[in-house]
Length: 588
Ligand SMILES: Cc1ncc(C[n+]2csc(CCOP(=O)(O)OP(=O)(O)O)c2C)c(N)n1
Image (tube, rainbow, N blue to C red):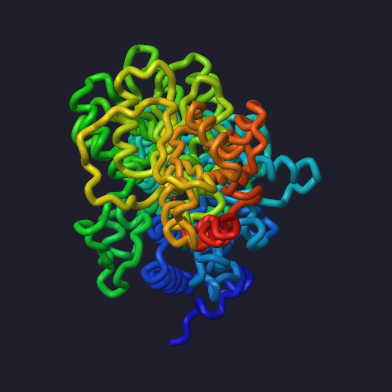
């Protein structure tokens, strides 16, 4: 039997199908997604859950003229495949291939670039108001947002504004009761009541002036189509509540929704994930954080843990399981997470606020205004710092060092290995009088023997890792490993000294004076932006102290880095150890 999907090269082709053919197409689309994600990795459960919704939306609406915005965008694989990217989809998330998220540059069907949550309503409303200003009353603007993302602050801000406009906006709530981990909060409880048909309060969305309909079964294509057709004729802000199952169509993905959010490679026939043995591998940094906070919190009753919607990803889950009363998942609410931590710190608690580096960007003013300005001792643990690989430009944690370095009162530290992460966490809860940001990368360290007894780290003190007489390499964080490997492979390793400065702020000034007096040539290496980052700090120090050394800064150039493996991306900007070796060889 020829596949319907093979003939769908754009939504136009889709609109030529009869409604009866659509369930078959849904089946094929699911299989297509499963086959490719099984082999190539990526996000799975969210896209499987919206297969019918995706087909119905492109069937009913006149995309790309009508604007379809996916919140977060990790659920948009079906959308990509139906909008002319089927044959390229096997390149998803690879270097030079399709992005794992909607991206305006990639397709005219990707109305808005996404990756971070809770943006879709504001963006769609902006488009709808623009259409109105241009006198276009017919154009449709649709935001599809999940139940976890709609609880994010900006989504509420968008709803609040939309409700007092008559913009042609349709918000579709894709309610599967789960984000990456189960959704949390009073709104989730409310939605659960609505689903059971026992609304205890007035309808929240009606109260905000939306024309509310639902909840409807998001896997019933015919129902979806007739409801979307009806909504298309209604003016003003509309809200459709759709119930779906994350992972729909793959048994394991429905049953273990957390694991199958992004399962890695799996067996298409059985659905089972291929497991890599953890026994012989060093731990992931996130697990070092997770185990260590439990260990510390068991000894120190003032420690609390906070995560905005990433219990599994951050491994705060270990503390949530073991000490639930002191570990908080606050939902996709980075701003709230930071100010909540600030509030707790005023009362003598020691909050460990774990946020992915890229998502901390959402809470920048809270770090400045609510934490640093008041010198509150919040411990920020910033996971996924540096290049994160396949998630790409929306997710690289490369701005943190430069963004945080300019904030008074804030200590900025980057561990070069697992022990350093443990020890700085230990140090941070001993009674710091100011906030600290600890940024560490995605993935595994290199140390099997990481669980050593704690020892205190002196704030603002760097270390010399290797002696040398001609060139000084100053690294920060896990770039120490690249530098170390690079030096070993150099023609004259004995001429290169290596320092792990550890603290971007405060700088180890005594050590820096020694370095700048001894070495004419200095290279700084960081996996953060060159502009304003660690190397900049060294240059500023040298300039302020009238040193005339030859200082070269290696780091992330002034451009957004796309997706690919971390090694490939490092190679593309000369931060891998081989490129570093070549660079060092030219200087010694
Ligand atoms: C600002 C921000 N914080 C955290 C994340 C990480 N994240 C990606 S998807 C996701 C869950 C989204 O769940 P939901 O909105 O219910 O959408 P669904 O997966 O059901 O489509 C989270 C927390 C993010 N992308 N952006």
